[in-house]
Image (cartoon, rainbow, N blue to C red):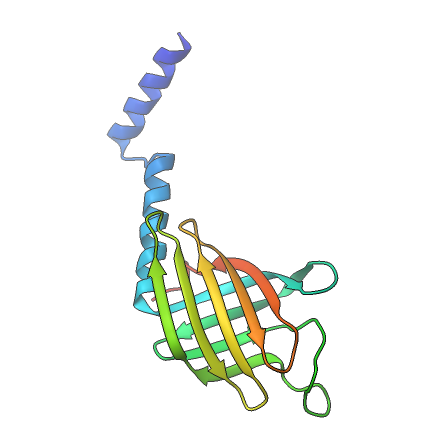
Length: 160
């Protein structure tokens, strides 16, 4: 009896045009792929993971944005700095042109993005992985500071 109800609900859902979980997952995967390929996307960060210490849940809106050939980094920094300007500098809050940008998509729809950028006070190497469900991880290696990692989500809502 239970299977008959499930079959009936499935048929009604198909007739009504309500997308199933699998269809929603495929739609999300395609939206993520299109954003990454367009090279115009934003990753909203919600967790910072310094080399030492605990993970830090971020309550303010931090992000990493790629627009055409530029990176707009608004990320907090927690960790040891080896050589920084007096007053601490601006850390990972900067806008700069992208250098050596590469993006590869695997069979599952995950994107591996690598690029470098230079701000007035440091050189950064970014490595980001955006999964097909929209979650993302970002690793940043710097010359004058310890490395740091971030976790977040690809912003698929606010695209024009």
